[in-house]
Length: 216
Ligand code: B16
Ligand code: MG
Image (cartoon, rainbow, N blue to C red; front, side, top):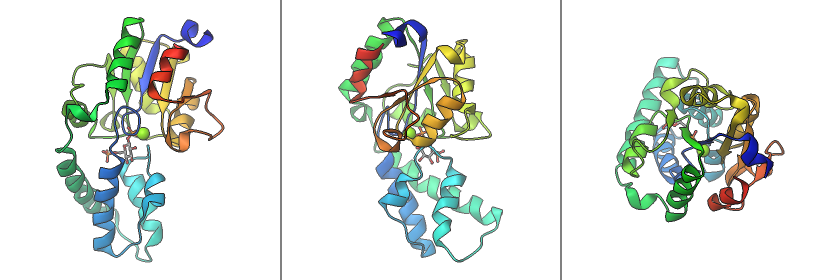
């Protein structure tokens, strides 16, 4: 495969690719939206994939007729994150599927550098919860960047930290914003689940996580 010739590193999105935290994001945003009397549903939640916490709040506030100050918005995002962090505490190594664990191990044994590249400021906490603390060759997360996906910053930081040229990196994403970010970084983009699939910008559409072993 041409992919395995060019590619030296694989950069993995976290939420929606390595593990599933969507339901916790949904519950936490729903708690806040209900308190503020703002309509929120799963469809709106899907629009929040890959985008930063503040950008997510701004999407939710599109349904509000009230204007909020930046200070109030910061209080709201902190409140949401408090609920979210409590929910994340229920996660454990069992939330990392054997398919993901075995595929990652096999890709490493085939010589690829592996990175986690996520918009989430909770990345390190989540990686600890699911037993992947210290596993990746580099981690870039929401705390390392000033612009979240679809901006390429998080992928460029992850690539720089492992010393691999962006053109030799592939990204696995579940969000259209993440596929856009990967292409803007000059990387190969692989879509798995979510609105990443069929967005039209992806280089490959993966049937499953382990399908990576057919490509690399
Ligand atoms: P936090 P990813 C993203 O993670 C989530 O998909 C997105 O829904 C969330 O708003 C964003 O992280 C920020 O997360 O509030 O934990 O900092 O998909 O880029 O791994
Ligand atoms: Mg994601």
